[in-house]
Length: 311
Ligand code: FDA
Image 1: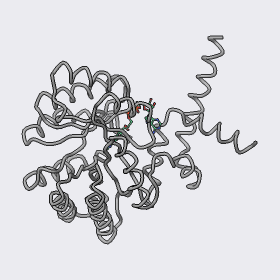
Image 2: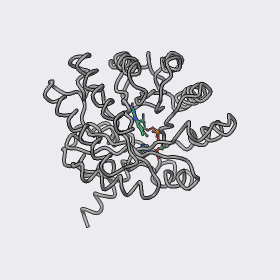
Image 3: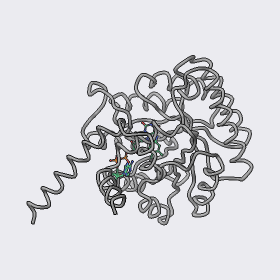
Image 4: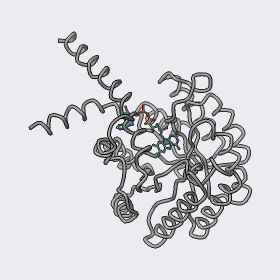
């Protein structure tokens, strides 16, 4: 029996690896089919509907207009206008939500100063409505530029914060540096494929670095969004918060839409603040591919849907 199970597990794991390797080669329609759960929809109305349903359960949201690495300034301006519209809508409906933005969507890959001005405009607007802008962290060519952007923003605004990726070997030192200027963090493992020279690759070493960084941020008294679906990390974080006697207004848990809803409901029912990342928009492809690649059950879903199609 044990041998049989192991064989089955090996097969699923092998099949998983193959699917992960070929996700990018799949037709867009298939990627769209499997990734529906991760996206609120293509329109702001759909995102608002979803955020309202989360808010009704006491769950917060951070809204993301999908898109990254724009090709020119017109596209970046368009992205900024859509983000401004999101802020207006959050205000109009009194949503328990803030806004997440990707720096390359605002033009960081084209012109640093231009991107800074764009994000300034968003942060100013957010300030006027007592809201907050989270600057997502992208792949390592943008790490320094993103921190530079954040430092410039924090000179003018306190309603903005950045993301730290625990898989990057530099992150602990980055946090020591950022703690000095006082910032608001989201801590995640990191999603991009980075070379072993700069990134931890082992599951446990990433977890260890995550907890080391978490402890440093909590002890410094900075606000942190603990962004993970890893039960090991969530359990350790709760214990750390308890041991350090961290007040509730200093942290929240964060998760992605469509991932471990059982766990998110449990955290919510335990009385912790929890925020869900709610992406929407027409540019869903790159985000969906990343989510599919990290879904450990992807082989199972593909099998199941093939079975359903054949019935
Ligand atoms: P891990 O990947 O080990 O997942 C733990 C468990 O969660 C899995 O075993 C599985 O059960 C479930 N799970 C995880 N992903 C799933 C999926 N796609 N489908 C189904 N189940 C899944 N990254 C980044 O580089 N820059 C950023 O700005 C952000 N922003 C961000 C915001 C928020 C709110 C979250 C939660 C995450 C991010 N991330 C991110 C992504 C993050 O870096 C990481 O890739 C994912 O959160 C997955 O890592 P976990 O810590 O959940 O562990």
